[in-house]
Length: 469
Image (cartoon, rainbow, N blue to C red; front, side, top):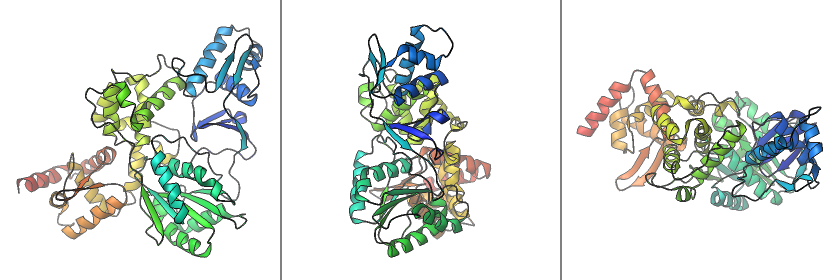
């Protein structure tokens, strides 16, 4: 879930950012931003005084109390804050902090003073997140809500289901006079607690039109389906958005399957301008720049013709998954895009070591593992064995590899259908019927499991025999 803020803390929201002065906390799209204390103090003063010119002396006194500091230090700090907020001084007009020559600085972005918190009656609605490359699907989901009471946003871990749900709730909020509510079910370890979590989120409603977002439902999908069905039958003013790695499969459900962001068709010879036409590359460049600014790195990462091919290849390799792209981009400032690409190809472990955000997102190993542990043993076995396919494969080839003494053809076919439904296997029509493929992250994890179970050589032998046949 997004970072939790005490109910007593005043906060300032602007664009995708939320600034909480008492906690020395800056969030972007609900995630903490690394910012130095002096930069935070300067930003907090400017935001609190938004619209008013704040003099240099006042800013210096706030950030460097009791010290004699040159004006140049303040200029450097302002420049670092602008970069942290996503501005490029070479190409962008100021969007957040304007320089008032001879006087000081003024915060010019629109600021909303808000109170955020988690009360006894469920989770507060997190701030909507800035979503790149999803305009069409967000508009489609808003339209779905006009004539459907349950919309499930389904997709693999890290594809951005929560961000999409929050963005839709923000876009559709005007249609619900009793507001929007949010319940993150990820912390629940017992399906019996689902009813209490949902009831808690709805407590205190005035029986008007209301939108409820149920986030991260895959591990308790059965209980969510049961309670949602009953709730919709008994409460006609209620509409639901559910995020999960598989649908609820109940009456009236409208399913929107979220795929990765659009990526370039090829990486060889692509230039920066052409690459930046794709949302996946836009996200990579943005995250790499912000990560470099937050770490105080110089020079800051810039997408150019020299690295556009490597960045495009990274985005293609990661199937356009936003979380995976963010993780890879955070390495680009120190490693360079080419080294990140090489590291991706060689090792899956580069995604370990991130400690911010929900536990399920701290490593991409954890993201895939969270889905794997929910599978039946027969489904786990099929997922592992399919890792021997480097690209697309058909049903017959899958059966040749996966059918063993303990897994017959019928079980393999059922497992494949289940893996597709649970967003762990990609399916696409082809001339011979259906072609299947594991995404890069899923295959990397499945291959680790295949090796750990001592099944690699046997699966490779079955694959070769099936090819020869």
